[in-house]
Length: 203
Image (tube, rainbow, N blue to C red; front, side, top):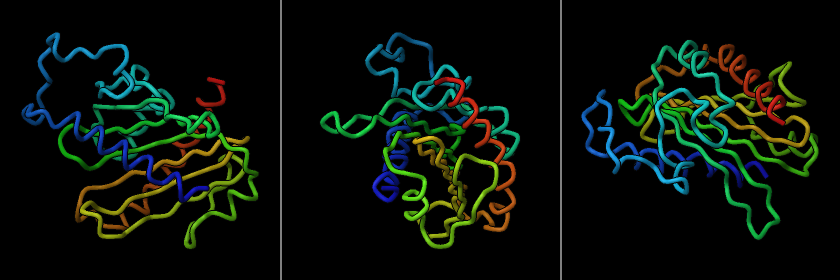
């Protein structure tokens, strides 16, 4: 279950990176021209400047001020949308990727997907080395990935609540100290609780 879903944030990140790599000088706003205006059909994939509430998919669930406060970064662009269901059998996914606009990393990805699996099945699928989180959904975990991916360490946090799976990943710039990422767990837990509350209120 969870292993099959892990590819979704990576694919969305690549789409966002492609959208933002348009030759605009770092730190400058793209020109406000008709060519840059998204059609209604492509609005779910085009990056928008925060306010996250203006973006599609899972983006409105994220509190941008909390994200910036926890990370010390200035996240400015978000892209999200609903995922496609396969043959009408798989539940649709809500996705979001958030970037600073200055570089590929740091970035935050979030996806939300409904499931018919029980919380027990969800817990059985968790990878070795995960740490549990209290007070977040019915079951929650976090883990820091230190694999050589061309970026820095990544904090992954996920939880299950009422038949919905949430997964959030914060990827840091290269050469970031893993110990510094561990120190972000408390702040990201509060961000995750806000996401869970926003999702419950939206339903």
